Length: 301
Ligand code: NAD
Image 1 (cartoon, rainbow, N blue to C red):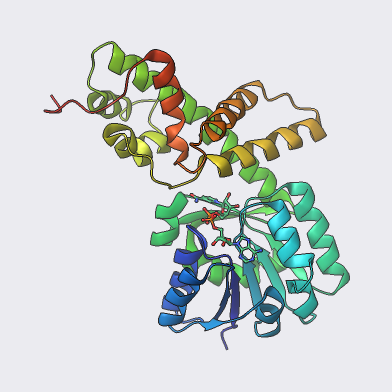
Image 2: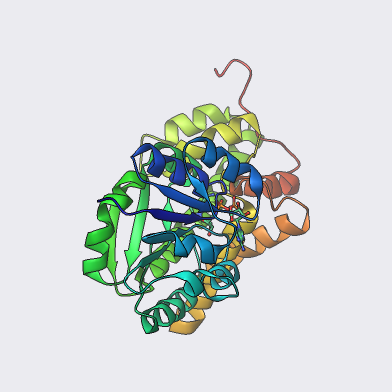
């Protein structure tokens, strides 16, 4: 029999992931502190729970998709949290991006109650969440990963077992370094190209055929060309992820100079009230400094 899945956190990512699970035939019990997305899921046949504890009481497996480490800590280990309602033998999967240190501490706390926990952060953005093609990087026990694979396959495509608890979050920190530093490179390149008089649409087309081709150009290209930065992935969440990367670098003695620069630029965007824009809005800082706005030329020629 298919497990009943509890899903907590129905934001940009969680809502489409939960929707895909319902569409795949799973019974879902959902919870979020905001009502709108909960009601949308109820309309598709999910059941509502008033707290994380109630989600755990009604589910065979619980998934969390929350913003940051303190949110996951609160929802899992806090008052009225998952660990208050969960039965021994239930699996807990955190798919948020959080600190590997917090992920390991929560996995240990859960294990003390007979609960297996996986850290399974994702990449692929809202588009990947909607289309069920996320990359999922998973830490925890191998046999628990194997049991949960059919559920991961509903939400993602490139699903990789990374190792023991926390290994998924370490991998996600690596991912966010690459995306952040690439966003900065693309921002500088497009601003330079545009100010030097070349159509940015043509620059993206040309770069996409060679070594410079990347997910940022492919998936965020339309943002740059239309100069609209609806999230997507919010600047403040990417800033949080680069802070996690910096903390992890400090813990393991690895200097991350480019990461720290991009994190400070994201910090500046948050200060300038641009923290809720998509992270591709990093380009707006370079544009401000260069005194130009990047846009596709009218004809595209
Ligand atoms: P979001 O802010 O859109 O959604 C988070 C949801 O959690 C919200 O609906 C919020 O109401 C809910 N929530 C927060 N605290 C809660 C609590 N205590 N109880 C119940 N509900 C609570 O964020 P998102 O963009 O969906 O991102 C979720 C996670 O996925 C983050 O860790 C983020 O870094 C990661 N992520 C996001 C993307 C992306 O493109 N958006 C891509 C990969 C990974």
